Amino acid sequence: MKKLFLILSTVLMTGLSAQADVPWKEVAFATVAAEQPTYRNIGITNNRQDFSEVRVLVQSTGVRIQRAEVVTDERMSLPVWHLEGDYSLNAEVTDTFEKSKIIAVRMYITTLQPGEPVQIRIFMR
View 1: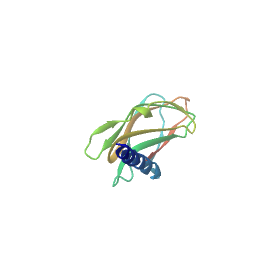
View 2: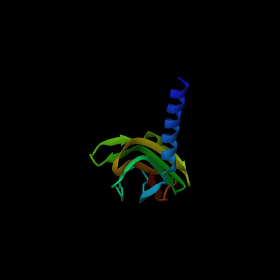
View 3: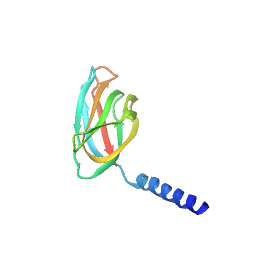
View 4: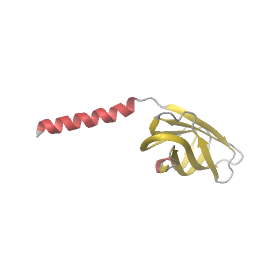
């Protein structure tokens, strides 16, 4: 019984650490003038590989992200709820989803600083 537990825990730990070893790849950059909630369908530059994590880096003073989702090459929408919220300069937020080929990231974006455009970078692995 102890051997089985040891083998299972080793396999689980190896699988979890393998994902953390994969480097993040920048797949999109967006600048949006968004005084009110603005729907953006941000296309992914390299969709030949499968991804299972998304990370958004905010490069504006204040940004609100709502109704975030990733779109697969089969046109299925996968929600990424952890991306939603209010963020300040250099904030990073990540979420996971089912491993798929991703063609776009959709979200509603709003600036929290009137007159300032929203700038975000999207990374995946």
